[in-house]
Image (cartoon, rainbow, N blue to C red; front, side):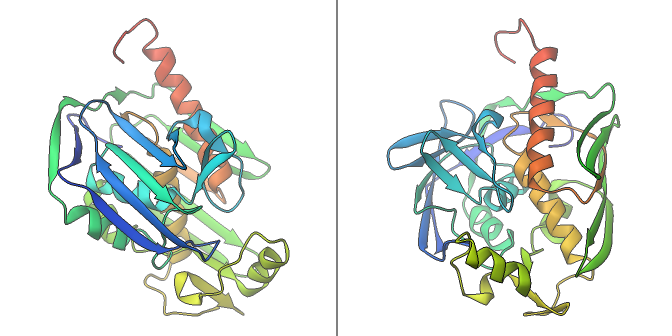
Length: 282
C-alpha cells in the first residue's frame, strides 16, 4: 500500500488454511490458489465468485463481509492484512464455511502460512495513486483523514467506555506491520459478547479465539500495551487491501472502525477512477 515499484505477486502453489470461524464458531477452510492471468483478490463460496472490490462490501458493524447477492464471506480483513504484508495481490480464495478461518483473532499466523509458500512475481508493477488533497470520512464524532505525503504514516486514537483510551502512531510499511500490527488480536468485552450472543450474531464460545475483557482484564496476556489500537490499524489496512493500487499519505483516525474503513476505500477508489479516466489499463 506504500511506495513505488511494488511488484504484483501470487503464490507458487496452493495453500490451505483451516480453523474455526471467529463469530460462527463453525469449522472453516480457505484454499488460496495462485492466479497468473489477472490481478486482484476473488473469493469463491458455493460456486459464486465474490470480487474483493468496494461495491461488494456488505454493511456489517463488527467485521468485514464481502457479498454477491445472497452469498457472502465474512471476516476477510485479517487474511487481507496478511496478504498485504506478504506482498500477494493476485489469488483466488475458495472458502468452505461462512467465514475466513480464525486462529487467535490476529493475522500473524495467517502471514506465517503465506510466507512459507514461495511467491511468483507477475509482469506488472502495482499502479500508484497520488493523493493531491486531503480526504476525510466521518460517522458522528469518529473520522479518518488522509493528507498528502510521500510516505505512509498513521496516528490512531482508540477510546472505549470500558477499556479507556490508547493511541498508536507509526510510519507504516509491510515489514514493520509483520512485527508490530499483525499479531494484535480481536477483542471484545464480556458485556459486548453477551449482547452479541443474545442477538444471535456471536455463536463462538471458544475464548482462545480472541481477547475477552472482564473488568478490563484480558483472558490472555496482552502482546502490546496498546493492542486495541494496533488491532484497529490492522483492520484498517486489511479492509483497504481490496484497492488495486499503492498509495501513501498521513492518516489520522479517531475511534474509527470497519464502517469508516469501507467508506475510505470507496472514496480512494473513486479518486483512482477519476485520475485514470480514459486509460484502458489503469
